[in-house]
Length: 87
Image (cartoon, rainbow, N blue to C red; front, side, top):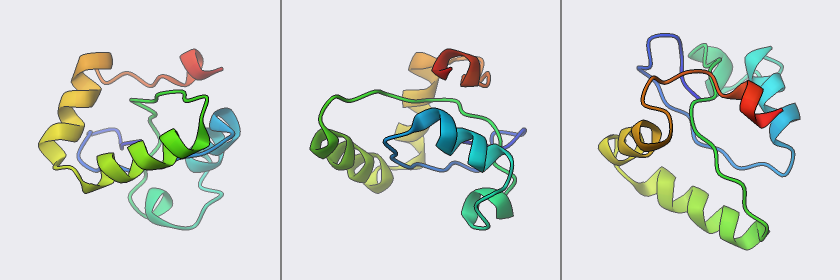
């Protein structure tokens, strides 16, 4: 997730992508995403295995901002909100 200026990035993992995205957008979580007004879902990947998803989340979080931006650009070069694709 990111903000409207694409300046702050949030990486997370969930088993319920639509609901979790909605909660971030509506600031139901009073944490990082609400504090920095992160309301655009710009990248996601679906995994069948929860352990793979957790491992990938840790890998992405440990990576540089440059690598995160490259992931987003490869899937979504215009940085559009992908919620409609998630739903």
